[in-house]
Length: 382
Image 1 (spheres, rainbow, N blue to C red):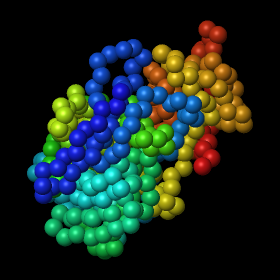
Image 2: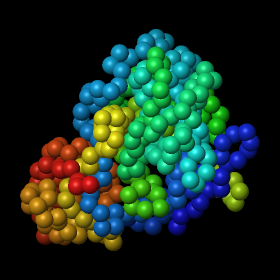
Image 3: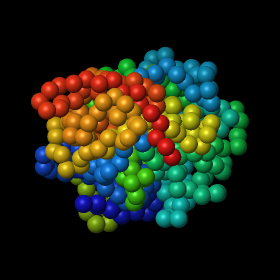
């Protein structure tokens, strides 16, 4: 059941529209927490993959060293002492506040500058619905500029915005591949419109399957998320999650909450989720180059009534990657490479951590036998 969150509207701050929730991807009933976009978004609940091909747009987490050509290749100096104060001082100039106007209203989100000529990364649910003139970018020095939406991808909840300015400060992009649970992290952004807010914590978990959704299936986001206890609140969406050296390792995107009473805004309970930067690099690069991002798919549809463990194949797309690999209806997928698959949601976010053309080893059960099949992921047809 979708639970809308009332707008946040304490003038003069922008109001945040955050009506979104999720169902935890466990096969057995449990107490539900509510998962909300940490910024501007639309209403929707995604509890499964109803009839959709496994995939959507995806990123190649296995190649974190590839830095998009549109990004600055020379990183600014990182703080030497690694203190939170030093990291904040180094990163803050490249963090922006986005004041966004959409057909649904106004809202505040965050972003960070990735190139000195004005490209910045944010969330799709922050900027994706903004029309011409609907994005006002507020820089850390108090100046403003009009932002133009270059491209957005709802499946990844990522967007790229461009401002017509040069010689801008940038933030260095790190890698999420080497993260470990317990690593120190720092979140920066504009929660509730409070620009320049810095919070800290640790990596609480990795590869956390997170689903957030919109009013239609093509607005659904499936994130193989970094979980953190650094305080993330509405308005932090699109801002950077950085490591102890000040390099971005994630894009803050969602928070879990026990819910809010009528008229109240849901807030942080120490369960925040960020899109891994290795994913964001590839998607942002494609958005900059083409305005869109390609989608890796296996070529199967899932049985959403299957309670797991694993993800059950309802049908195999003729001529697709799975068909070529020898998949059959009724197969239960239990592992992709070394990742154990608990349910359909985890299968989706795992496949989305690769890119079209990647070869993965998929383990499945069939008639009591365990089989491993190599699958060459393909790009979905738009």
